Length: 218
Image (tube, rainbow, N blue to C red; front, side, top):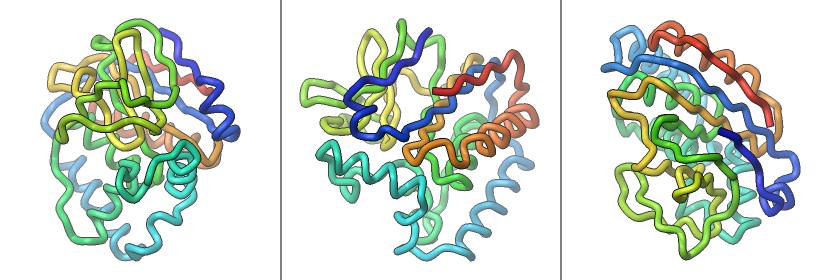
């Protein structure tokens, strides 16, 4: 499975860098130890950030910038990292989903990166990061049909699988996921990506039986 970036995305965001993790894992109900780490991160974030400052975090600001460059309103279709951080500052609980999803959310909160998480076994063929169109049918996880026109959109051979706003229900992580694909989207470039990869791998090793990991950089 190859992952490529389309010329249109390169043109809109020449500094874009991707960190891609492929690994074998075991999903489960979130352990208390993992959720204790999550709660500590939430409390730290809430104590050090104001609502009006969240969209100024470099990783979030640059993701919003490419939305605008492609014609999408980032206030209506917020990047997932921004949405998570806003929930925290507003005092809205973060849901426990599963070990793998909660790990991705924890990394996203700490880093500000919007992160795609996919079950590799559900992906068909190669993946290209392009731009969504009005003809793309996209069933977003937990929110139904999402208008992805003008959003950065990962597509496999069957259709869209992920955007910085939401991933697709078809390729989502489930309780049976054993092959994980994580894509950390650095629309602000490489700054912070290495730390986020290391943090991700440490959490996956501690809580999800990480094995056979491979990290690719684009």
